[in-house]
Image (cartoon, rainbow, N blue to C red; front, side, top):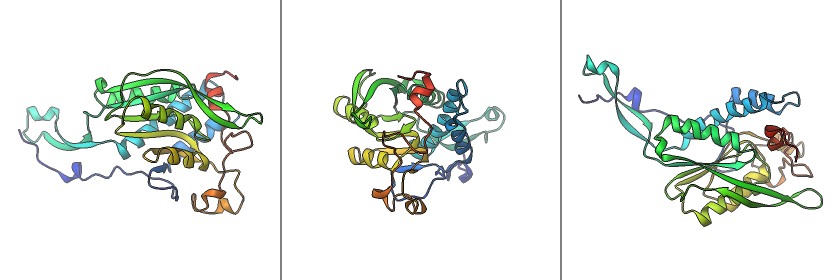
Length: 273
């Protein structure tokens, strides 16, 4: 049986609904009412465990789906339905995820443990599990005497092998200064090969984070659910994000995101060190 082409299945638009900004085409801040509502609840001081981790899971399920829809390779595939046994037209063509693509999701401990596992589990359901891998990386940010972030150090990891030709995902909730994720991406690029693509998956990001990631890794993509620039001047907050980028800030004096939601690594693990 040969599939008959139906444009209803093949001429599809999987594009994102996203915030208008001037940070460049590699930055995607989603405009998602459900995600915004869940994220607001996650950031509330009234929200505690076990709801915190349940919300993180829900949010990353939505975020990784958006990343797949927007950036994953796809191909026209012939699909046989159950009805093909009774009718030759039970075969059709549909645009689906390319199952031959290899993907690595990187758990950046500790805030990235749950987000990476969510991505890993969903990718295993959607694609060929033999081509899906999860790595683990310990990255510690360093601070100066004023508790301001001064850098990041990789202190250990469990890496499953090279990343050549693979899509590499870095799910990490808070994109504050970008030091940790930048260090992680630099490590992979210098030690483990050339990825097909690298993407950061964040719940909240700041203008400083975007600038740091794109400066250090201009080939990277950034996907986020919210942009926080709450420490900017009032008149700057009335402008299109990115139009006065150098005047935008979402960090306090200790490099925590404002309005933000607190330290997610601490909150997700109930560990305050």
